View 1 (cartoon, rainbow, N blue to C red):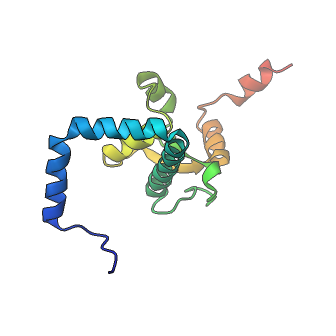
View 2: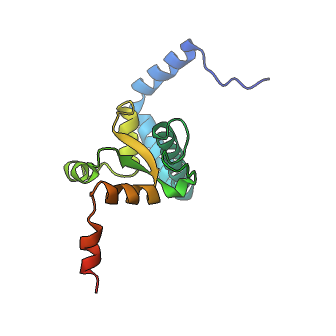
Length: 143
């Protein structure tokens, strides 16, 4: 029997109704499974965070998971950049919106404008060029 990757609308509706009418039971069973399988739960959460990061960085990298300036594509080197340089202000207003929480929020909001995918090198160069970071002042403090 071939694998069906899509459910019929009737099956989806039936599933949704079941979830709505059995919320407490599903919640209890899910938490019980998570308690009994901590390693697997951790692995699933890590995979989900990596998938979400890849999806968001691909969107803001103009449909490529790569730096929009230099083309760097190693996921460990990439991060989200505030185009207008207002990341510090936003972090003060919303301290919980960092990392996976930020990625989740952006996806939920329909990927609002104002972000881009940059590698850490390009992000640091941008900070210096836009005078978001006073390199001379920082170097003057060093002995």
